[in-house]
Length: 74
Image (cartoon, rainbow, N blue to C red; front, side):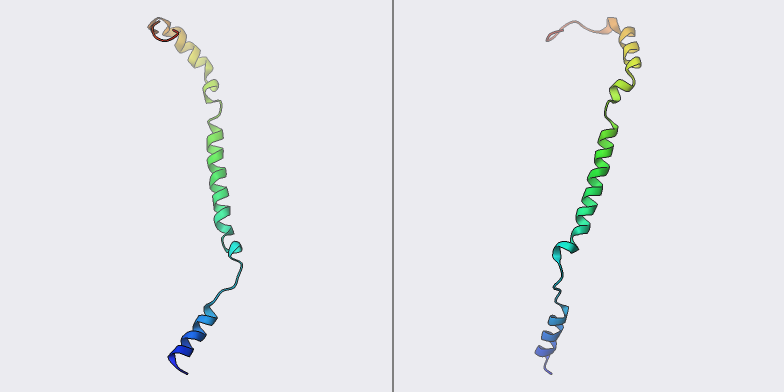
């Protein structure tokens, strides 16, 4: 056997004829998990301002005189 035939046999055995789409499914699963986690983080900040409406109203009453009545539409 020559070096060329040994290299040809080695190349033929190392070829892979599998399903390439199946090999990349893991990337899609990781992407879905990451986007779902980011979506949950984003959804957790929903309606945060209304959770403490009583504090905002108390602050507005306490500082009603501090508001300057100038500018656009004020």
